[in-house]
Every structure is written in structure tokens, then in C-alpha cells.
Length: 338
Image (spheres, rainbow, N blue to C red):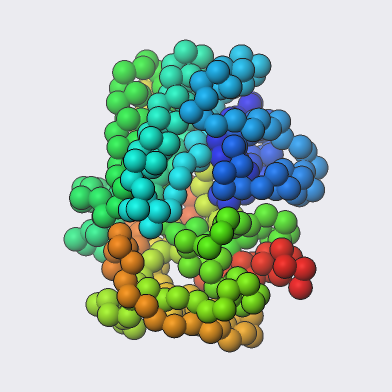
């Protein structure tokens, strides 16, 4: 079975490609390398022994996409490719609306034209906004998005649901990730931000490696146990397995239309200081960190209710916060040639 993975050289995409190959899927990757590096393709081959088919194409390029879909009989799609920085989306919302929504529209158009039945969509817990009740379940209605990135995910889920209702015998799943961290056990693939990291853990590892002078902790006045924001951190390898479970669920379904959405997290909330302490303890290091004002677009606290994922997809997270911090540092040391 041949699966198209958009953004397949990115952080979550590359780990999912490895999981797919390890489970005998044939993979075609589309990635324009805007937030990834070509050496990741080599490292996927080193891990799996298989070099996936790769196209350097922007998903807004319909002509380039036509070439891909005409060259391969695609059985399913996992759609990762999107801009994902909350802070950047606040500064440049039009960039996010243009890219994230139009790229999905192009993917759905080709699904429609080529009669492709299955799609797994990379959504986000940001669709919930700041929920009224924790842990947040899939039954929680969307609140007003706190940033344009989150708004694009809300709109994208609606686009996908409407497409499935319009198109006969099409099946889709939106996976609402919480906060992916960590790296592959081989330390050959992991989170690889270009420029200054927007996410906490690569900022931690780069500070520990001496690439950054200090770590900024945004906000110490939240209504949490230590004043810092709380998130549900999930190991990226556990998250990759969730995509495999979702795709298999769609493949095993009958011909009826299906649209489902699932939280993908651990169900445990950790504060920024909890994460820092775990990193320091498991790796026997001390970090140079300072508190700064809250960032625009950030929420105070969110963590997942994952009962639906466990029941329907037969998936659950397996790795601890210490596992996440240990693998993240191993990856950073490999990158920095420590």
C-alpha cells in the first residue's frame, strides 16, 4: 500500500515515515524543505534500510502535485505540511491562512480527482483554545482561537469534514496533538528548527549545548503549581505510532464515510519548570534560564483526555517525560558532535 506523506522530512513526519516503512507501507514524501533538511532523507534510509521516494514540491504548486499524483497510485495520505509557529502566526497571520488552508485545499482536490479514500490530518490541541474543563476531551467545543495558527487548524478540520460529507466513501481522521518532544532512539532524526526555536525543548537542548546563551521561560504568573504554563508533552515516537494506528483504522473500515477526531497526548500536564527539572536530572546538567513576560497567543494550561484514542484506535502513549528529555539530548549531542 502506497502512502503519500506531506511534510515527510519534518519533525513528526520523518518519525511517522519510519513507522510506516517499518510496517511495510511504501512511502512517497512531499516536502519543500522550508522547515526541514535533506539529510533527514538519508537518515530515514539509515534507520529503515529503505529510501522513500521524495519530491521537493510546495503544496501550493498544483502543477508539481499533478506530476506526483500522475506518477503514483496513492492509497492514502497523511498530511503534515503546514506552518506551525504560534508566535509567527500572530505577527504574520496572512502567511498562515494562505499556506495552511490552500495547501490542504490542493490536497483535497487531488484526493477528489484521483479517488483517494483515506486521509489522516495533522491537527492540534490548539483547536480547543483555553478549555473550561481539564483534562480536555474531544467532546469539548472549540473556543475562540487564541492565535491564527490555531484558527487555521479549526478551519482545516471543518474543511476536511465537509469534504468527507461531500465525497462518497471517503474516510478521514484528525489527530489533535498535544506537545510532541523527544527524538528517535537512533538519534538520527529529531526536532530540527531553523533559526531560533519556537518550542520549549529544542530551546532547552540548544541552551545545554551552548548554542543559546540562556533559556527564556515565558511567564511565571500563571495560576499553576509553580507559575509556569502547563502542557501535555508526548514522545514523538508515540505520536508516530498514533498515525499508523489511525491509518490502519481507516484501511480496516468498510466503505461508509467516516470522519473522526482524536486527542493524542499522555493525559498528564507538566509545567515548563517540570520539563526543565526533568531535563536537568536525567541528563545531569544545569540550565541557564531566566523568566520573561508571557508570549502573545499562549494559553495557561491544557492536557488531554485520551480515553477515546485508547478505546477506538487501541493506542496509548508509552514513554515518560524523562524518556523524552533523554532522547532529545541524545539527538542534540549527535547534531552538535558532542
